[in-house]
Amino acid sequence: MLKGKTALVTGSTSGIGLGIAKALARQGANIVLNGFGDVDGPRAEVLAAGEAAGAQVAYHGADMSRVPHRDMMKYSASQFGRVDILVNNAGIQHVANVENFPVERWDSIIAINLTSALHTSRLALPAMKSANWGRIINVASVHGLVGSAQKSAYVAAKHGIVGLTKVTALENATTGVTCNAICPGWGLTPLVQKQVDAKAAEHGISNEEAKKLLLGEKEPSMQFTTPEELGELAVFFCSPAANNVRGVAWNMDGGWAQ
Ligand code: NAD
Image (tube, rainbow, N blue to C red; front, side, top):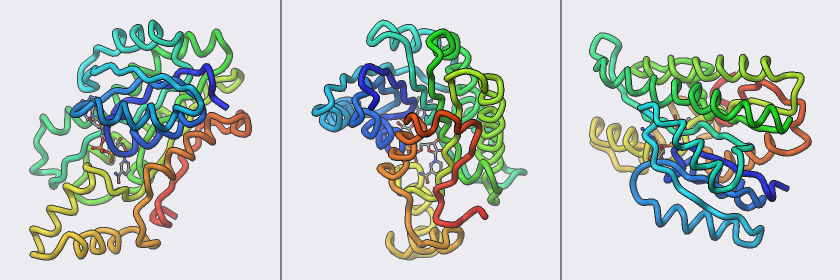
């Protein structure tokens, strides 16, 4: 379905971004990976996922807390032609009460989880509009819809990216360019495993008990949403069936926000 398209997925060396990259590669899109840590493993996984569909994979290591986005966009275009699908997924978390929230952590969460999506979107939109086809998918969170204690920067950034999604969708509503947000509940990725570890240490309980405690606080289904499930939602947003889906913030959260 996406053969010949190029998808840039920020923060795709791990977790949800990697799941989305694999799902898009399976549909034939060429993928530009981005993110920190091991690159060879994720690259091999995405290549394997897209092998049957002939998808190719490239990587750019831009730091989403800074503004080197123009270089990443130029690189993506030089590898495979313009960026047709932009997935703004890179994100970090920090947990502390408002009065103790480290200001530098606030700044980096806003920069990575919110501001980077403005920069990549503004740079991707001109080529998408001239082709009259494009998909911008912002990985927000259930925390783009509701709050949780100790997550001020994250909740502010995720509410912000839901707002950015709506405005981007509206400004392009008469074109073939759509913008939508995905709002996962708990997913068992490295970002959340840190919170499971903190709960296990705080209560002196096992990893399995800490997972149940975490789910039980918020997620009625008592199940983690998987990167594979979120990848399939991204594929839907890229499909012709979603041509007129514009500005939604679609939660996949086991019944958390309703
Ligand atoms: P993760 O820690 O597994 O992956 C985060 C990715 O972002 C990694 O590839 C990492 O290298 C990359 N990254 C971090 N800082 C970066 C930077 N400065 N520049 C470039 N890349 C950077 O986390 P995840 O759980 O897969 O989270 C992905 C997205 O999903 C985030 O936006 C997160 O807020 C969102 N999300 C996660 C959950 C969850 O439960 N896991 C729930 C809701 C939303």
